Image (cartoon, rainbow, N blue to C red; front, side, top):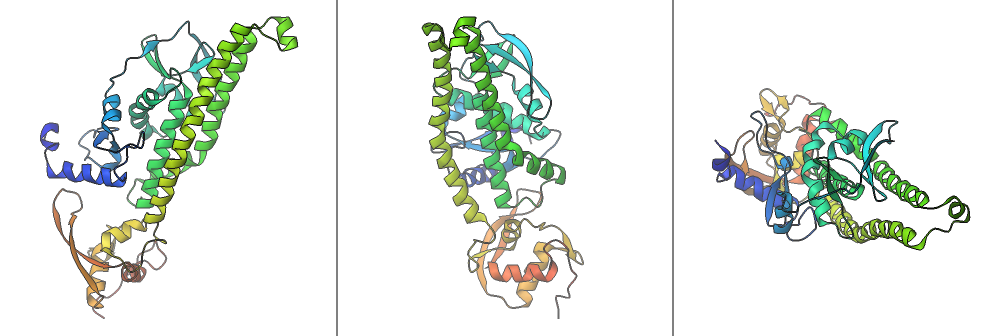
Length: 356
């Protein structure tokens, strides 16, 4: 199936709807109402489309994602290498008291997992276009370069998606990606602090460079020169403060979503499918636990054999394709009981005779 056909398929419609529901129909860039779904990366080498490749966006951010805004050239850039947060270095450009670098260079110095590259390359230009109070993206020698704020904002967006994955269940996520994501998420606050501290040192250096030795000793600089540097600092600080309220709102959304999707806080009497409950608990629903039955199938048979209360059925996608089939609804507490029969420790399967 080619791309145009796929965009008309039921599978795409289901993925699109799932992406919008995951974001609660809120733009994952600016918090406006989400009306579109945008690829942060496309499938490669026969990969299937997954929800992790998509973000929910409003019309404005969707246009920006496709490069509507032109970038200006940097003024008199000077290239140097600066020390990174992990005793490494980053190649940057200095221009008018500000630091710029390509997404590749920022990713390298941050030691971001390899699978974050596509995500950041897509989202950082959008973040820079949305920011107010100054220029955040530019062209230098034919290369797109960015200041630190849109990079930090991109890290925030990735962290929100990662928290969502943890809340929704990441049992089926490749172990190497899971471990790399966990490690990187733990360092995000440290990395953001490093980036803003880097910019602050650059502004201080720019101010000192425009002062005579006498002015440096006395702390008094030429008014016009000092005001230009202070203006750059004010732009950076203003944008950071302006975004702080937005980040608090996003944080509240994350807390509500985590609480709603946390396995402990979920209503134990609510009817859900077996697969949904297993994924809520970050367990591998496809693991074989009894004969040829996987965990979902075995729990379903257990619930039927024990005469547990059934709450009707819903259509659920079959594993590995776009087809759907009826799936029974059971109370969460009963599903948890069934899971404990097969995985008493939460991770090790146990064989059980379903006919006893």
